[in-house]
Length: 114
Length: 116
Image (tube, rainbow over all chains, first blue to last red; front, top):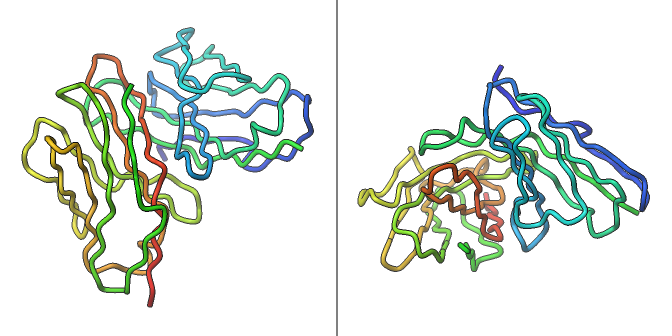
């Protein structure tokens, strides 16, 4: 089954404790992206990757890191989480350019930073 | 930078009735894509319908249709014969047509309640 998976689905942590949210897709997509969803703000892009070893900042990259060492994986790293990073996080992937290249979203990760 | 605005934080409709969700956007580009996503309580993001800006004809997917007004930069979603399963958060989104552009710019969302 074609899908984007994220782990963990739920995470409660404390300020300053490094964490990684994994994202993996099995569709051979070039493009992958991370979004955060906050009430009243919709979804905002954090980082994206056009292909292996090609990453760039989105609209709200502060406090986050990413890597793209393999085409299928795009982990999101919070080196020193803070309470303002409490949010719902989505990973998405697509083939790239074109109208019919629909972005597929993962199931979301609910992160709480105390 | 492009922006998307959904001015209705919440909407409610009686089952079997029709409801329209509003979306406006701001862009200086002439070609782009517009989308409506549904997010049910499961939190999964589900693509409902999409529109290419250069196409005059409004997109339709079963009970879902859009009213695309390019000059007004308006992209509303009409849900006909509302069903209980339509209850969800709905997001309007914009994507540039520029080569390599994949970022979706989302609106704030509209929470739709269906009353039985």
